[in-house]
Image (tube, rainbow, N blue to C red; front, side):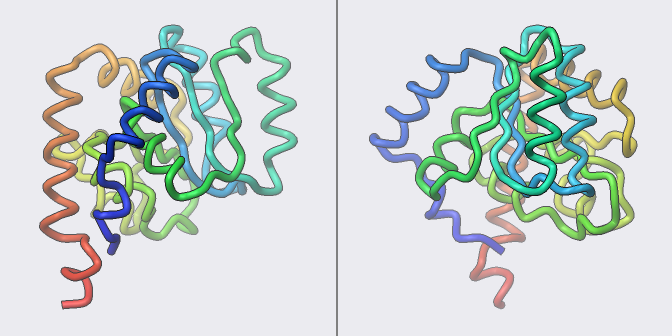
Length: 193
């Protein structure tokens, strides 16, 4: 469970959100996590190539950071993929609020739950996650709080991104439901109870 208060919008955060959107443009897709083998960031990068209007923000560090950066630097759309490294809690909350959609493209059962999904959802963001036989799909309900795509399917991932980024009503509806789902099932207090 998470503490929703960590992600509450404040005037300072709203100013940071505006600055992030001004700096990177919109729409914004966000990934948060360690850059390790089971996170599937390489599939997300390939999917973002097929969504020319989108910017991708990658938050996190790990052993695959250098190879991912090198791959992105070789691509014609490298100006749309931004590696932000590790960020503090305040900046992370602002990034969630600035994003239009959150993506968790994990590829292995090592992704048991995806707590970052809850963090994005409590900020009212729909999630695109993969159909892993773990708790990932329990958190993000396909068609309810976001979209679920097959593992390692770049085409399906890019289609989900295009769908959510082009349909404001759907994106906002899924985001509201995602927020409500966290408050109903996944707060720290609820989980402890």
